[in-house]
Amino acid sequence: MRYSSIPYELVVVIAGIFVTLVLASLVTFILKKSKPSEDFTELTLRIKSWWMMAAVFTFAIIINRNISLIFLAFLSFLALKEFYSLIPTRRADRRVLFWAYLSIPVQFFWIYIGWYGMFIIFIPVYMFLLLPIQMILIGENKGFLNSVGSIHWGLMLMVFGLSHLAFLLALPTGDSHGAGGAGLILYLVILTQCNDVAQYIWGKLFGRHAVVPKVSPNKTWQGLIGGILTTIGLAFLLAPLLTPLSLRDTFLTGLIISIAGFIGDVNISALKRDLGIKDSGTVIPGHGGVLDRVDSLTYTSPIFFHFVHYFYY
Amino acid sequence: MNASLLSAKLMKLLRLLFSLCIVRPLILVVLGMNVRHRERLPKQGPAIVVANHNSHLDTLVLMTLFPLRLLHQLRPVAAADYFLRNPFLSWFSLNIMNIIPLNRKGVKRRESLFTGIYEALERKEIIILYPEGTRGEPERLDTFKSGIYHLLKECPEVPIYPVFMYGLGKALPKGTFLLVPFFCDVFIGEAMYWQEDRHAFMKELNKRMEKLAKEGNFKPWE
Image (tube, rainbow over all chains, first blue to last red; front, side, top):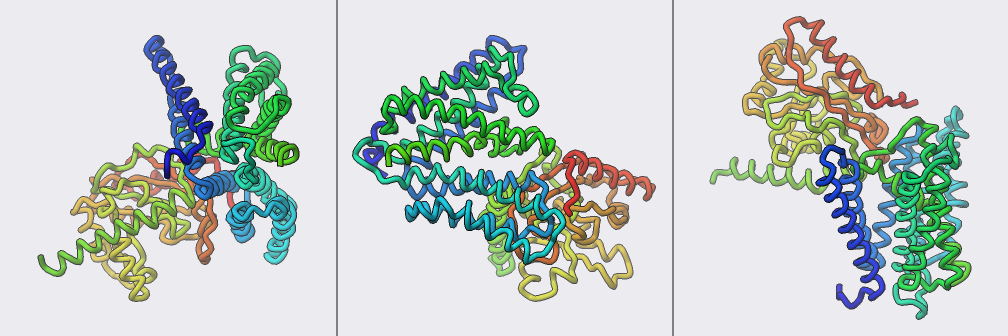
């Protein structure tokens, strides 16, 4: 890999990510020194995880397109595995789940060859029709509806939804901007993750009125609106470097990523409330699991993708 | 260097490669582990790890829990009639999995049954044992058989570590070769010791396993 092969804009933004992380680590360090009586373990763990995730993610995205595809397919796999391990599944459905997992390499193969038509219908149409056939052949009627619905729902969120991130790489690269598909992924992922953090911080500081009290009592209007404004601000900072977006569309993508991120988050919260679980796993220390990191992305990825696809490609 | 020493070194290398290239990627990446109370695991032998048994994956998971430097000290106890039933499986079980074969049938005297285990404990190895006796129904905890009581009678000072695993019976239950990825949860209990009273000892051990199982609040797999 030649250094010069990485677009200048990406280098600037990635440097920005790491500068932010250094600042976050410094702030935590100062907090720990100035208030030794308080417990900052949770915060320290979270920032440590962010370092890890930022390192792995930026590495996977900038090296080359194929490594990015493999990385994103793997991310889909981890999220789907966490989902299928959380929900109640039937013993009879092992084979159905096996086919569901196999749809990941197939879906990412369509992306690899850039076949948009197949990418967009494979899971919503073909897997949707295929999974019940396997179930019928197994012949376990009890719990059929529940099972066929939840298995495909997981596939839609964790594979179909998240794979839109990867298709950003397959979009034709014009001369309009240097950062290409990797730039769009970086833009979407940074905005989505920062939106999560911003909504959390604004909510902590000024949160009074819950948006959906029954699903997520900690998500407040104050947090949501603060998050939206922060994300739009960040969008204006990043869009000129990473995307071909006009000023109007920069504003709109900031807005929709923020709102979609919120919905993706509470969507998984509702699932967890239903199952009676708080954190979905302990793979990432201090973070819950992979599902808790990608919940917002399951909504922001398809929505941002179709916005860009409709207006620019 | 004589031939047997050379072959022992070669086996150690093969075992290490098998663990690094197959077992650990399979358990950590394809399946994924959620381990609770990892700090309770023994740091060295002699020790006996007792666990519930649902799948062939159980042993691979227990081996992955320990650091690689303890790899050659890990000795799963496995049924001779099953794991030595053909030459290849026998070679693999004895050399790569490093099992201690146990004759489930046709042994009159208990002492000769456990000889291999006692020798291993003497060498400060860590024994992996499934007191349920067999893999059983997936994701259902069976009562432990009292063989463990008789085994420990001769070495009451060896600590026992109860471990409860969930999810592996879903990933690879008895009677299938189709592996389906599921996270596995591993709960490690505190060390306990042998007691003279057989009923009290077995009751205590079973109670500890049930307590570990309850930590996860898992629903039965229908």
